[in-house]
Image (cartoon, rainbow, N blue to C red; front, top):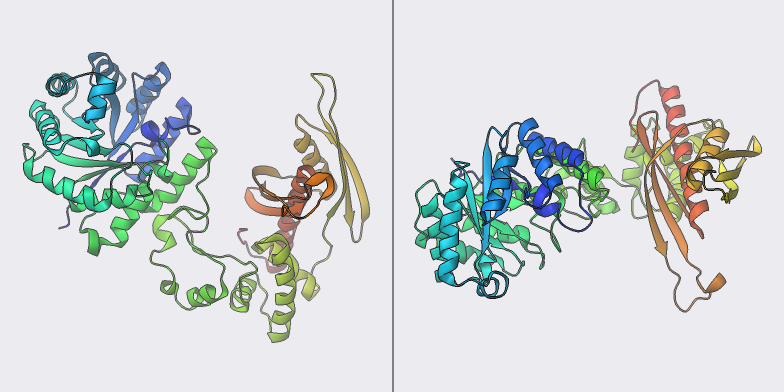
Amino acid sequence: MAPNVLIFDTTLRDGEQAPGFSMSEDGKLKMARALAALNVDIIEAGFAAASPGDARAIARIAAEVDGPRICSLARAVKGDIDAAAQALKAAKKKRIHVFLGTSPIHREFKLEMSAAEVLTRIADMVAYAREFADDVEFSAEDAIRTEPGFLVEALSTAAAAGASTLNVPDTVGYSTPEEIYELFRMLSKKVTREEHVIFSAHCHNDLGLAVANSLAAVRGGARQIECTVNGIGERAGNAALEDAVMAIRTRRDATGVTTNINTREIMNTSRTLSKITSTHPPRNKAIVGANAFAHEAGIHQHGVLKNRETYEIMKPEDIGLASNALVLGKHSGKHALAARARELGHDLDTEQLNAAFAVFKEVADEVGTVDSARLATILSRLDGTLETGLWTLSRAEVRMPLAANAMPVARIELDHPRRGRVTDIASAPGALDAAFTAVSHIIGMEGRVESIDMQYVAADPDEDGPGGQGADVLIEMSVAVEGESFTGRARTRDILPACVSAYIDALCNAEAIARHRARNHAPAAAE
């Protein structure tokens, strides 16, 4: 049987303390529940001594989240350990994580302690933490820059005092996989400890090597990986949980180990964190990025349609995605277009496919990605089943009142092939809210904006534009209509009309899907 590697998640501690990722108590509790569903082994819920809010969040997680072991970080001082013990009081399974710097630079400049004093502090504080918890972890902060002989002595001291997990952090993300591997091999041989005491790897991503270093540490003898969801954390982040876990799962032949993670909860956990922190992973992020299982190139799409293994080494279902995504864009070919058209109920002959492909390429050049709703509109217009044309923005005006308690007013004019020009006026707390409300009144469909992504595309420096700019704004918007999400896209010179046009586009896509369902009498999910 393959050895098991514990997954120690520090999203709520190391991840949360990074700029831009602060979470509320309720947010941390929600994230902890997602981590429990993911079946991580240990949740480092925070740093109890850091703030009263952190202590309260740890206490709530300890009391309300079952399954994983709940952990609090503590400096090697009694006050921190007392705070951690108090916060963890209600936990069925608890761990106190004590850390102390061991490198020469930490000893001299941060701690102002001699090597002997550091060893004494480790022994005293690990033993003190054991008075409150049977499970104590010790971290030798900046272990990678610590003299190998002194690191062996420090970890042996912690093990003798009662630590059952010995963490070897690459605090500044400086190491390489080969160095980490050799270090853990050496420690496994030389650190004096009982058989149940394990080594842990905690790697930062300053050189982009955190996951590779963590896996190298496992090869060298580590049996715990400390990581974060979406790889968030100090500076460039920590080892990404999803990357490490799926690397172990996918390349078990190379790693020779397993984890307890329920991988089908990976996407849900990632999305939960994104919602709580209002920060999404990059589109090209491994495993959980929007493009991780997406294919736009025609050659790739053709291969995947024949056999997914031509370009996929993992199944999207294994991480909780319903399927992969054949992204229809300007690089896509006829095979992908025909396949998506069939899914939407349009079985195209050669002539129809050629006509649809020509229109599709024009739209793709203009807006980039052509989702199912937009494609349904294209196909319906070509086969004559589109009963009404598309709405387009003619004019958008917003008036901002001077009074502090008054709301902005938006006047929107939309053009329609059959209904002509229609105008509506609406007010709301925000200028965009008012404009969206007016659009909804005209089209007769309510939508709720879920997200807006904006790109400011600057003009070439050699090109002269109005006002010296000449730039464009690209807007991609997700709009919920009757519980489903629809994408709207627009590209204009200014932000306000671009946002309004993207909102119109999303509602038109929702209308197209609704008409398609009415014709085919079958439910279909929008993308």
